[in-house]
Image (tube, rainbow, N blue to C red; front, side, top):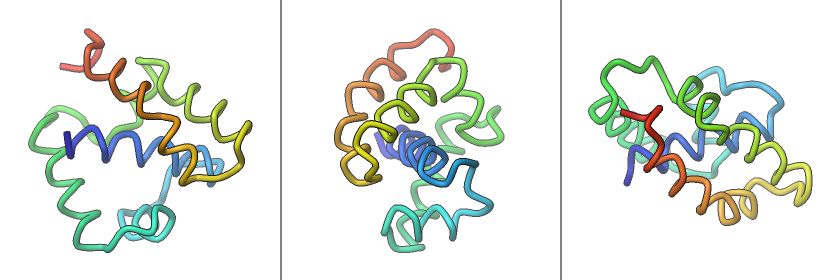
Length: 99
């Protein structure tokens, strides 16, 4: 689940910034996560999806990124977007594009 949490957080941060975060440190700052936790989440993502460079492709092909952007436009708050994006994470988990 930590790997998917990172993917969702990365997507929500991308929606909030209008671009992907430039680093895990920027992701940590944007999500108000400690840097240590952000790096552990990234490590979990890399372990779960070793062929992925990052969550961008996964978020795009599953339609998750578009959903994060729509939610963020509606609520204009990254923390609320994370909460409302939880069903999107479930769709991502069962997507055949994520393997």
